[in-house]
Length: 391
Image 1 (spheres, rainbow, N blue to C red):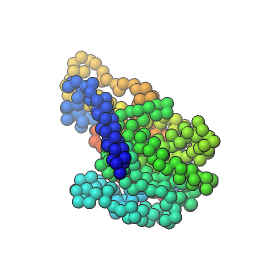
Image 2 (tube, one colour):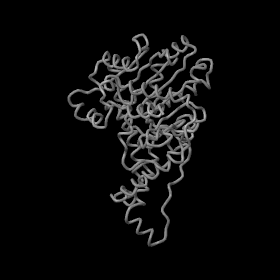
Image 3 (cartoon, rainbow, N blue to C red):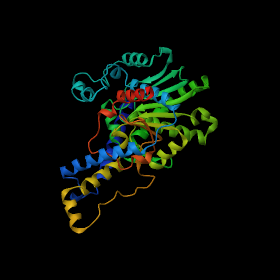
Image 4 (cartoon, rainbow, N blue to C red):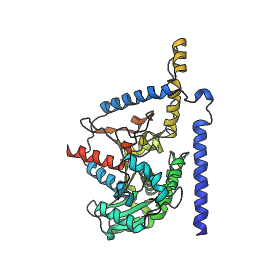
């Protein structure tokens, strides 16, 4: 309709403006001398990245809350199933096939746009072993930037009303990812694109979720998602818990006790919010090995670029000649530094134990030079969780 087209244009404009603001924040104040132009610096930093990951795995204590792990595994399976037909085909199960979705495959058959709702619904129900009656509500297409695809399902075995939020699949989702300017959220800040997605999602599902929670009073409202979906899930929980705190009569205990599980969730909220989610046990973020997404944010990109400049041959020779020390990362405020949210479960393959307990602050200044794309795949998360639980 005309109104939908207008809203789509407004959201596209908002996303582009947010991207411009983010790029201005990262690059706008940098002169030519503060741009990382030395390729040897990237090699040196990559060596440090590997050492930092090994140090992290050795330093982190073993995960102790074993009760959360089966739920985390089921949430990971839901997060993969939220991709519908694409996941059922296994198109996101390797780096090669995933790359095809956003390139060659899109030119002939766009899996985000051309798959029918019926095919996506069947794929989701088949992967989750649910019936048609268990599917409460679904939106299989992103209707524009700053909107997301999702599924609301009733899971009687887990006693969940599950909201599985799809990660990046369409061109509109990529624009949402790129709307990375920081905007106010609760007592801190959040990724603008993910925050707007979260508000739009809650506006769409709040009435049906309230009906479900009223009908199934002993069930828990659980949000989950992969990558962008995990970020939206976490922010939705923050918004709902905030609403419950200010208006308990309207929202009740179901909103106050809702929880989010995310796999490969980006660093989408400020440090004070991430640590608040950790204290409240409202969000569990799972990080597989050296997955790049939980380490990615505007603040971490700034630190990476500064460090690459310091590691250049020219700067190294200058420090050696003058006796200067290598510049340390600037200390950011808790309201602006972006970190992955909540309790952090670090999956450490080839380590014993493979489940390690981390905090948001453990991922400060850890943006990798080269992203580990294989570690970000949803199936890799499921396999590592299953392998750890089997030990």
